[in-house]
Amino acid sequence: INHIVHNGGLYKRPFNEAFEETPMLVAVLTYVGYGVLTLFGYLRDFMRQWKIEKCQNATEREEQKDFVPLYQDFENFYNRNLYMRIRDSWNRPICSVPGAKVDMMERVSHDYNWTFTYTGRVIKDIINMGSYNYLGFAQKAGACQEAAAKVLSQYGAGVCSTRQEMGNLDKHEELEKLVARFLGVESAMAYGMGFATNSMNIPALVGKGCLILSDELNHASLVLGARLSGATIRIFKHNNMQSLEKLLKDAIVHGQPRTRRPWKKILILVEGIYSMEGSIVRLPEVIALKKKYKSYLYLDEAHSIGALGPSGRGVVEYFGLSPEDVDVMMGTFTKSFGAAGGYIGGKKELIDYLRTYSHSAAYATSMSPPVVEQIITSVKCIMGEDGTTVGRARVQQLAENTRYFRRRLKEMGFIIYGNEDSPVVPLMLYMPAKIGAFGREMLKRNIGVVVVGFPATPIIESRARFCLSAAHTKEMLDTALKEINEVGDLLQLKYSRRRLVPLLDRPFDETTYEETED
Amino acid sequence: DVKRVKDYLYWLYYQYLLATCSYVLEPWEQSIFHTVTVTVVAMVVYTAYVFVPIHVRLALEFFSQIFGAQPKSTV
Image (cartoon, rainbow over all chains, first blue to last red; front, side):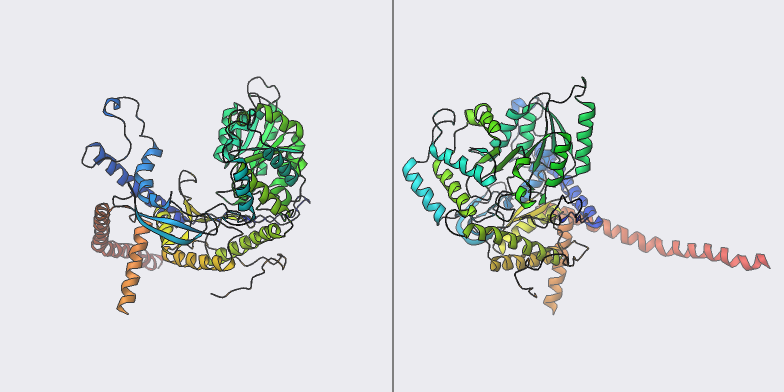
């Protein structure tokens, strides 16, 4: 269903999100496929149990066979009978910088993916459609690399302490001031690991007696942080504002479950771009709800910082809102900045509190200096403070690539989920055999893609996820599109029953590339 | 031209492998699966061949008896 919303003045631009329904025949065939695999899985398990076949997966020792079984649940069954058969599409070792093109080590398996051996050959110049390299800062030459090398020779690589002890370098202070200025918030704090930023700081912000309203499809780090905090968690349907409002109303009216006392805090956890769906959060509506019901908002901009907005400042700028409305702005440096780590930005009191009470600040080693310098250089590049327009050009190139790629894929007839402007493009595959086949066929044609199945997605909705980058030129995208077209015909992936006509209300400067006939 | 037909048939076989997930099975498992499928399809075809014409003829006779009997009863 296409939601094109122009209402109430909340949205200043059209919000085009589409999740096409699964065709009935495809769903039936997917279930048939999983049924066949389950039956053969039972057969293989039977043979392994009765020693007809050698057991190559992890099992309990002989003495432990009478204990509570460790490997009998569905995840382990899926792992040894389904995942093992198509395992060669994941964990592929790369041996160069993951830019627009990447080198990969070739490996073969002689016992159906239980063990791999390297042939010694390196497959060169594979078009990389899987790395989170949105602005193309994963480079081995350039301003960022030179600055990082200089800092490496000055500070070394290790910090050997936590932020609170001896690990607080002047580089960290510089980085935090810069990030705060970039986001438009009062103060910011940076951590060494993006996952740890979420999972260690949410427990510092909320505790027992608080309520967390989290989206259905939130990332594992947010879920882990919410569970560790001990607060009550309620889930609302993905990006569904009616569901969120209903939960907020119930929370305010009924209070805590037994005692009916008011909640100490209500925290809404959302992400900027959801990487499995490619959808963008309805931020204006969330902020309106937050203000109406007096709750707090925690926005995880892992994928959207640097990738959305006319100057790359994330989903807040994309919707034209003020960063003051979001109470806790979290993000990672892994995706658009080509480094590692995460940050939290907000009011000065909040960040000062986190400096003292966050587990990550107290126990985790602080960020390595070359990584900090990479972030500083890339943020300055995006803001334009290094004196060039390279940053701005990259943000615009990413937006053009996104629109072009999505439009071409939709015209070809694939089912693509998500918002028109998100650089994460999930292409639906559905059937389990096509997951393995798609990964292998694309590698044969020198394009590296990431395919995702259960348990990261619902069991019938497996997909291939393309991550676009500002480093991709139009030629690379055209090559990739041609190969995807070929593989789509070969594997019969063009399930979409609607050929979308380009919307007429789009402004004319969007497609700067001429229409190609192919 | 023969090559084109062969390629098309191989493509159809590939689609069957993908749709029923036997693409990921090992060769001996594929043999078991193909045997079972071919047996089931053969049984369905044989049953259809033996029973469908007789049942269709009986159904037509039953319905034509109803419609055939009408003019006689109204006059």
